[in-house]
Image (cartoon, rainbow, N blue to C red):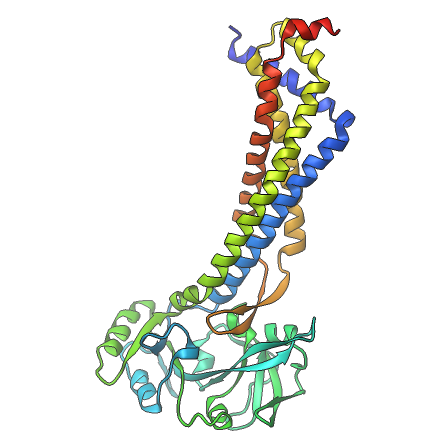
Amino acid sequence: MAGPVNWLAQVASVTKFGLLGIPQRRGSVSAAVIGIAGVVGVLIGVLSMAVGFRKALTASASADAAIVLRSGADSEMVSGFGRDETRVIADAPGLARNPQGPLASAELFVIITLPKRSTGTDANVPLRGVEAPAFHVRDKLKIEQGRAFAWGRNEVIVGVGAAQEFAGLQVGNKLRIRHEEWAIVGTFSAGGGTAESEIWTDATVLQEAYHRGSSFQAVHAKLTSPAAFGPFKDSLTSDPRLNVKVLRQAEYYAEQSTLLTTLITTLGYLIAALMAVGAIFGALNTMYSSVSARTREIATLRALGFGSAAVVASVMLESLALALLGGALGAGLAWLLCDGFHAATINWQSFSQVTFAFNVTPVLLARGIALATLIGLLGGLLPALRAARLPVAAALREL
């Protein structure tokens, strides 16, 4: 029996002959490599959309921030509070404060329709009425152009994502809302979070425009520390004057992203699986062609004492090499074309558009390479076994 060193030398020799013969089979080899690259590229591209959407929502979250909704509500759209209730919430223990008062912003969330820049089709855009503490509750918020809106006026500021995705949202333009014109006086960023998809204005002015009286839909709060969440929540949920549910911002935004990210991820894996079947058949065809072209060569090596295990290993290594080449090509193209690509989609919890950037992460690249490896193993297994079972005597008679 050949020792480990001798066996590895046999595998290396047979693999070398196989790889050197690739130029003679460049048509089938190219088809297999491109097919695998397509599978990997599509998988990474689709999953990067789900990762980017989730990141856009969770980037808005801070460990020391919370959101208060009406009990039973799963989003701001179906929540509601009166002014008296928001004052009770603002008096809860654990809230951070500044010289102007507690950092709790009672907010109103409505939907307006604007045309998209790319297609001109109308889409739902969130318009948020906030109170002064909102600029401290969202500590990542930064005015990028122009200025903040003036309190008590028909003025708005626009998230950079919304300004990029929808037409007519440049600073200096007028926005028509409820038969009135509102001046766009600034744009803002929010660390890549979902607030960048929104338009902000004074909550009191928005209430008057929509005849909402003194009603709000949610209270966004800044806590003294992440550990203060427990006392803050317990105080509100045990108060008989209130009927609320209290969530950490991270928890709330994770819930908001679940439906769409699950749908995208499921579709991504389904499409990749269907494409992978075709890629496996392509790999099988390529490796069968390789074995057929090397029948005499393999038989000669077997007659010289090369073991069948070495032949199996060499064919599998050749298949893996081609698969990894295709995987690397697909992963590289996905990273170049998708990473940072800006898009917008509807958040089904709020029925409004959220702008986000595709995010190709190392984990997604690793998944793509792992899929390519699996395709290479499955595509090379049967041809490898066929090569190992070639009748040596019959093959040598063909020489």
